[in-house]
Image 1 (cartoon, helix red, strand yellow):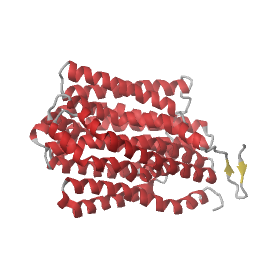
Image 2 (cartoon, helix red, strand yellow; image 1 turned 135 degrees about the vertical axis):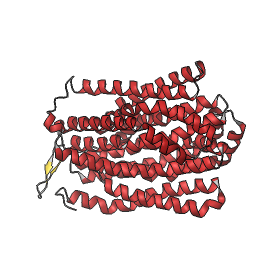
Image 3 (cartoon, rainbow, N blue to C red; image 1 turned 90 degrees about the vertical axis):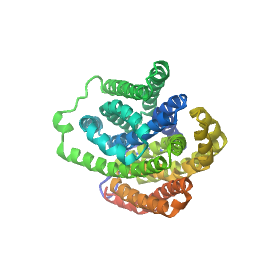
Image 4 (cartoon, helix red, strand yellow; image 1 turned 180 degrees about the horizontal axis):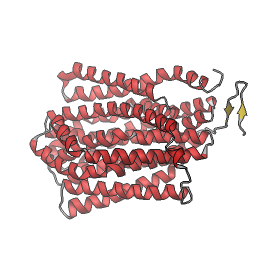
Length: 453
């Protein structure tokens, strides 16, 4: 197939979309995304072997905090992936390189700023999270170490986003697996072998993320033939930087709204006691694993929709969305079934505390249905990022967050049951809002590119 021109003068380039291509992108990225929550899962499991609710609660508290701090800057991955995919669709090789370098500059600046502000962050965050004094003291030890990984964590986002946008998802998989293996080995060595406790888990994750970004930069440099070959003026082009900043700003606001819901969820668990906090932390890992499993399909939607927009190819765009939604729902049903069947065994594996085990089993059904409740939300996140519909995604997330708080307020008498129901309602509201808005956004997006609607 070759590029075509419409009567309006727009160039339409071919973009192949099939079930095989969707899974070719999704399969390696499913495994790669799964390795991200496994960093927290390994910390939780290793600390769980000690049998202390306090230490387990400390790791859970930091998981919430660093989810907010680090995942809040996940826009570096998503924005980089969307802009890179559009550059690929437009066959603009120079811009493919320049997008990565701009993302790397932003990652370094933001990461160093977070390190510089660590005392202010800790002073503000821990009182808000509201855990017991014993949990907070242990959590502060973890935080003081892990915060130094910020520039490296953000650099990993830039690397992974660029690889996704380029369609090199298998390479992204190997990098993420390498990070996870390093974290597992170091976590066992430092925590159980050397007896460093929560400090050991923090050092393990920090060193694993550092090794990951070093390896990632080597991979990207090799792809460029050892030289990036992009003039400084192109990298720091004002209009391009402004566009990247605007894209990342909207994704950042959307992400912080998303994480606000999970931090609020964790805070309510902490207020209910250390056992409830620990049980919700164990179950939250199930939700994260399910979500990242579905994020493989979302990544395929992100890459194919971004490439289709860059190529001005609306039929390929709509086909990519249909296939992605279909497989996301199918996989979500499978995840729900797996969690219902094997959730109890995983709970026992992750913690030896009997009170935590008992409570986690009580609320397992809620965690088991979260993949299906969030299936549409995960898929449309990928579509919206690829199409750079970031302001719409931001606004719809704000509406869903409002729904979450209203549901929680209404369901407060149900305690932790009400909290989980509010979370499920939040996931459904996200997907429903994006699905409805999609039908008005598509014609507007392609009309702006000189295509008939």
